[in-house]
Image (tube, rainbow, N blue to C red; front, top):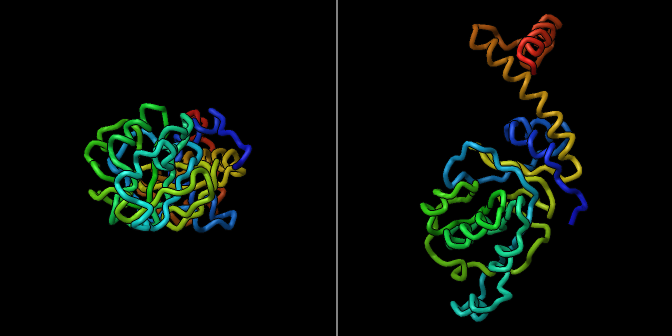
Amino acid sequence: MTDYILSEATRAKLKKVSTASIATALFKRGLRNQFIQGVVPVAPKEEVMVGQAFTLRYIPAREDRNPITAFRSPDHPQRVAIETCPPGWVLVMDGRKDARAATAGSILITRLAIRGAAGVVTDGGMRDAAGIAELDMPAYFAKPSAPTNLTHHEALDINVPVSCGDAPVFPGDVMVGDRDGVMVIPAHLADEIAEECTGMESYEDFVLKEVQGGAGIIGLYPCTKDENQKKYEAWRTENSR
């Protein structure tokens, strides 16, 4: 697990940037596979999800290990993960991209929200999706799924490196989710990505204003003309950006 601790300053910056900007910033650094594929918000939220990753890994269920009585164990990893994910962190579940059974349901996710988690992400299914949608806490999944996780999954490991939607997620990585989906920022890059994307968002706001006013994109996006850079600097000053 990383020693990195997400600062409130970096968290605040990341809450104001898009996953698209983060994807571009990571691509510049050669990182092409940091977007969690195949997940969507259970319900869109106004606030961007930001938090470090606390992980839970599922493997295929074996029938003799996963009867319904498995949940009686106080050491069941799914339940333990819900009760130990730190406040302000994001529970990331490796559901093997298999939504034939749920990786969690509304009771567990409500408990996670009440404990102060920043969000939850699974590349599998969730049951009682309507209840999860009503929570203020952001949640991302592949699709609704009624069967209990024991049907096809066994929760096995907590806070180990996992794959979620084909993206590698290491404990402590920084998860950022908006209406487009979820990006995974390697922990050691989080501060510089937040700073760079803050500038990118500012420039893109300027570009959008120019395009809405009839400007063409060549030489503007990306900026390759000095005149556009000067206009942007003037716009920043005028708008305190």
